[in-house]
Image 1: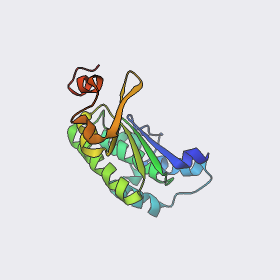
Image 2: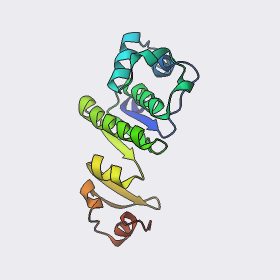
Image 3: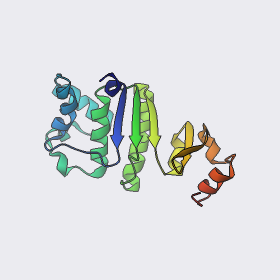
Image 4: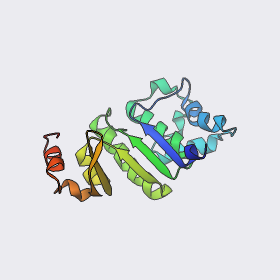
Length: 166
């Protein structure tokens, strides 16, 4: 249970439960025996760039980018110290992807939360990441500051970064 409060996760498909945006935000707290005040729900939506008027909207009617933001907001309600982001922009259009990237940078600064972002988007890793682990075939091939993607030390990673996918 402690790990669940320490580490939050946002997934590529941004799963939603049936019902309103408020229901989606409130569920994790309800499972912990807590209640989510409408004001807190409205505030967390604003933190992720959504209008509080969405609270009563059915989650099935949200766009992909809106679902991803609700998913992130839901995770933030538990105030995790680490946020694991698993390919959260992979299924989004370019505009929504950019909005999520900007949001993650803002959350990192505002909430002082460590982000572990799993992505195949090398440009995203270069521009947003501070520290990068390059994994090839399930094994760590190289680690270091994200600028390592500009000039990898190993042939395997160089080949991967140049598009050869080792």
